[in-house]
Amino acid sequence: MTMSPVIRVASADDAPRIAEIYAPAVLERATSFEVIAPSADEMLSRMNKILPNFPWLVCEYDGKVIGYSYASAHHERAAYRWSGDVAVYVSDEAHRRGVGTALYTALFEILILQGYRNVYAGITLPNPASEGMHRRAGFIPVGVYHHVGYKFGAWHDVAWFERVLLPTIKEPPEPSPFAEIRNSPQVASALAKGQRLVRRIP
Image (cartoon, rainbow, N blue to C red; front, side, top):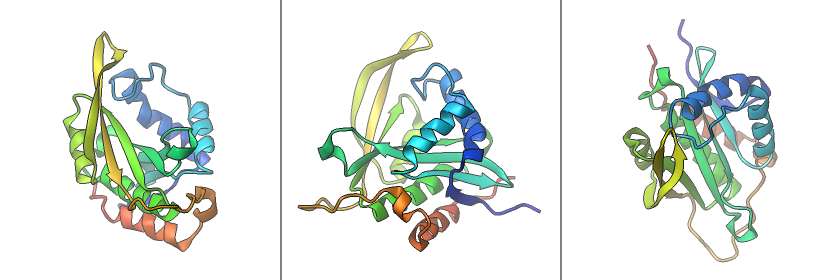
């Protein structure tokens, strides 16, 4: 029997599979500007660093993680603290099933609960599939870094996209750490909203 998709907060047990999904972006494509694929231990270290403050989510289907998404600080300086960077990666067998959109939907709902105002995503060009997915998720393009990275014998441009989560207001409340709301009913509702968007995978 085929199980329904589940979007949930990532756990330590997910690190090997997350590293496996990420590896092609490093070793086969210029999607990531890393050149050495991180090990499961390194990926777990990154997850542990992010999760106290930001969501790191996975989409699981038939007991297997098929994609993940996370947020992180946009910059370290204090005035940036209401903005975040986001990324989503989906395994090759799960493309065009709404997994990326579903993960982003849940991620953004949680970031709104935390009080974040804007999110940003960088996309190595050309990548029409990723650009299309980000536009459908509500992002708009804000600029291109030309020839900013050199990988696989070529210079690559990176397009930057932004999405507004909440209106900008004077004296905004401080964003809440993810750890403070992780087990709340509101987060559970956000995860459920995302997972309803995943289409059946044959």
